[in-house]
Image (cartoon, rainbow, N blue to C red; front, side, top):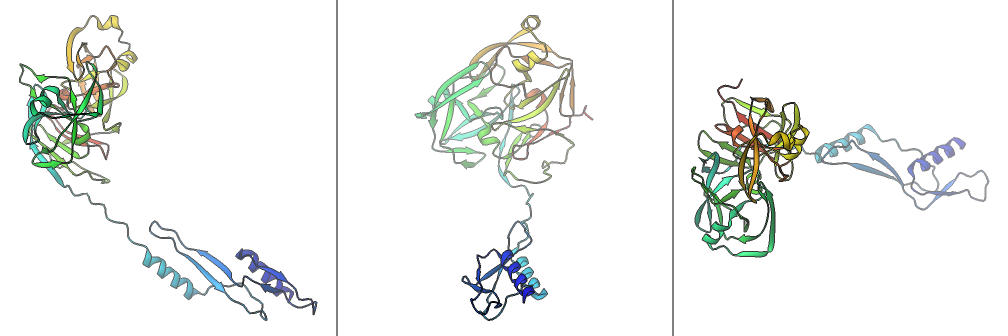
Length: 375
C-alpha cells in the first residue's frame, strides 16, 4: 500500500493538475483519497515542425475506491498520434524560380544616358532610366506642358549633384510603361533641364520607386528594357546566355543598390546609378584618400548639372578602380567638392556602357555582361 501511495504522489506531482489529498479519519491505514478536480492531465509534446505542433492530453478518471497508477501510453496510441501529426503537416511549397515578364520597352542611349518612352495621361514623354533617383520625377517644364495640377499636400525635398530643391508633387491619372498601366497617381517635380546640344532630349527620370520594385534587364546592346516580377529564388540567374560577371557583396539602402569598390587601395560602397553619365567620387571618400582642396585645384574643373542646378567638380586621374571582379586601370573620375548625398561614390554609364545588366533589389544581385577585353 505504501508503494502505491508513493506512486500516486509521484503521478500527481508530475501532472501538475492541482490535486489535493485527505486521508479518511477511520481506519487510520486507509489509502489516500483524491478530491476534485477528478482529472489528471498528462501532456505529451510532439515533435515540432513548421506547419503544426501537436499536443495530446490524456485524461484519466479514477473512482474513490481505486488507487491511480502512472499512465503509460501503449505503442498503438503513440503510432496513432504520430499519424495525426503527419497528416496535419504539409510539405513546404516549392520555390518558383520561373521568370514572369511584366513589361518591355525600347531603350535608347542619348549622351551616355538611357532613355525610354512613358505615357502620362495619354501623352508620351521621355524619361531617363535612373536607378539612383529615389522617386520618379518629371521636369517642371514637362509638368506645365502636360497641364498636371500640383498637390500642395505632398512636398518633395530632393538632394543631388548641384544642391537641393523643394517642390510639390503633381497628380496624374494614368501612367503607362511599355503598354502596361501602373497604379501611380502622383510623381515628383524637379527644377532641371534634360536637353542639350549633344543629343539628350528627356522630360524626367524613371526612378527606383518603380524600377527596383522589379527584377530589371537593361539590354543596352539590344536596345530594350525589360521588367520582370521580382522573385525570391536561391540561385537566380539573368535571362541570357552570354558570358556575365556577378558583382558580389551587393547591399541595399533606401531603394538603392550599393556595390563594393576599391579605388587606389581605399574601399567603399558606391551607388549603382544608371542615371549618372560617369563614375563620381564623393567628398567623404575623397578625404579618406587624402585628396585635399590643394591637390584637386590642379585638376581640370567641370560643370555638373543635376536636380539642384549646376556645381563645379574636378576631373582626377586615379591608378586603379575595382568594381567587384572588374578592374579598370588609370580611370579618370569626377570628384565632388561638396557633400550632395551621394555617399562614397556613384557608378554610372562609364561602367555600364555597352553591357547587358541584370539588377535585382530583392536578391541584392547585379550581373553585367563581359566586354571583349575582360576575362
